[in-house]
Image (tube, rainbow, N blue to C red; front, side, top):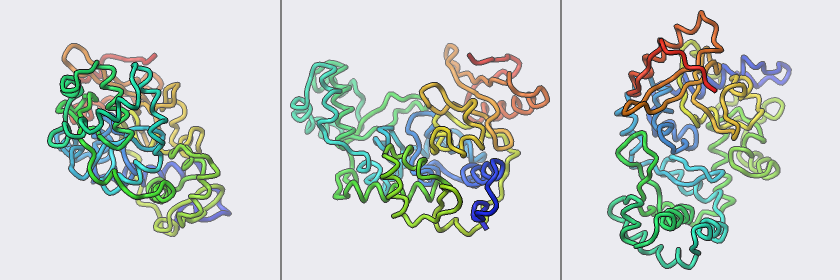
Length: 363
């Protein structure tokens, strides 16, 4: 029986945390990048989140395999909910792209800001598609071919991505977010209505993120709570207790065994940090609220210890080396060595340089 299924036994934060870790971390121990993208209804496409999110869960996955996995032909990078860039399974491309789609005119400001307009975009759109149909191109290549300024081309390409003409493609450097661009495949140009796309995303969300609340769905999709409530009711989700909902597949089954003793290094923008609304019981149960976000609400790289956010970590460039740092200042001294030893393993797996003897308090 699911831990939330008994309305007479209120869910405790510990029970909720165990359930979330079992579903979203230890339950994905053998997952590939494509598996993670499927489970979480897309991964934030920013690197290294796109490949580290899988490595954080699958300890058998090395960096080379993870990076190769994110270039899987069945995965695509496109603008999705809340105008964020997502790495999604090809089969999910149409609903992810269509659900938040806005009229082209809503992006006119991007062009006005650099001294151009939608007429210019419409005139160069065919050329952008033609240049990127056979091979993905860098912005510099497109700028050279179009004989336009860098800022103008960047804005035109951004609008083309929101318009469904282009999609983003990764460069060779696994740490780089200097995207290349390719002509969008046929999956983008679809007859799916926005209503149908939203319902499909809602179904996928509750299947991947449940137990979740209506307000979580609203926040994740960037829609009103009223709209989210209508979608939740149409998904076939099972009401548990309070405002918690779950998909029928998981409603009457016990969660998978939870392995909380494994120390887990989650990257910035990890799906478990970005899947639930600010102030949610899920964020609170995992102790993400205290250290897991910057002032803008962006998910930070964190260390999970016993299934709870215990410390922050980060990377920075030091010359040509990419260095990892862990802030252990708020950890009990008895746990510092455990976390730093795990940090050595994580650094070795991800190709980072880490010196545990150099304390790094974060500001």
